[in-house]
Length: 80
Image (cartoon, rainbow, N blue to C red):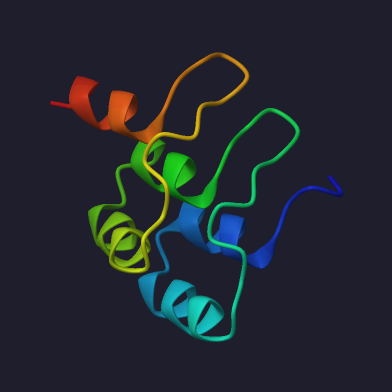
């Protein structure tokens, strides 16, 4: 798992305070795994609203698509 970053893990787990710290220290907010998963995508997929808000505040790209052509915006639209 060479393409997993602390920001990606924090986004997956919904740790918004850690996300904020990492972004303040210039973590790559739009880094994508080999399958195209970005921190914003995994936060949306995992229903971590507060984490999503932090990522959006730091201007994460909502249009980056996974290898399956899904975007964070697409995932958010299909959530109940």
